[in-house]
Amino acid sequence: MQISSLFDSNPERWKIRLAGLLEFLREYGEKRITLRGCRVLARLTPEQLSQPGVSLLVATVRGQNGRQLAGVSFVSGFGKEACLVAVHPLYRNRHTGTALLTAQLERLGTLECTVASDNAASLKMCFNTGLVAVALSEGPTGKPTLLLRSPQHPASLPANLLQGGELLCQNPS
Image 1 (cartoon, one colour):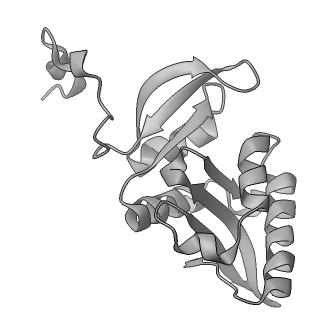
Image 2 (cartoon, helix red, strand yellow):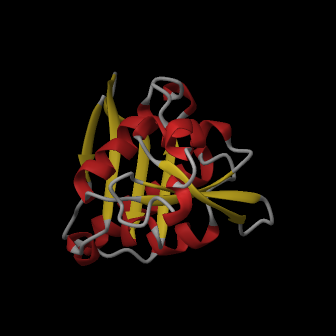
C-alpha cells in the first residue's frame, strides 16, 4: 500500500479527480461521512492544499490495471472544518484507515475529528492513531458524538483531568 498526497494544477483534471474522490466517499463511506465535510471537499481548490491544516491523502494498491484506490482521507482546518476517511471494503481491517489518519497527523502535526459513538470502526481507527477522546456532544444526526484530538494538541486534556488520583486511572503502572 502506498499513501500519497493529491495535487493537480490543471483545473479540468482537478475537477475530474475531485469528482472521483467524492464518489468514492459516497460509495464507501457507509453513509457516515458528514454532508458538511463533503461540501468542504467539493469546494477544495489546489491552492487550498498549500494552506496550513489542509491535506488530501490517498491510499493506493498495485492491481492488475495499475494503481487502484484503497482509501481516501481529507482534513481541513486541522480537522475542525472536515476530517474524512473512507476505505474500500476489500482493504478494511488491514489498518488502511489508521495508516491514512496517521499520515495526516504526521503531516499536519495536530489533528482533531468527531466520530459518532456508535461508529466502532472509526473510533478504533482514531484510537489506533493515538487520538484521545476529550468531549462528548450531540452530532449532526442527533447521535452522541466524541471529539477526538491528537495528544500533543494544547487543549486535548481538560484542566480538571489530573485531580484526585485520576492520573493513576489514566496510566496504571
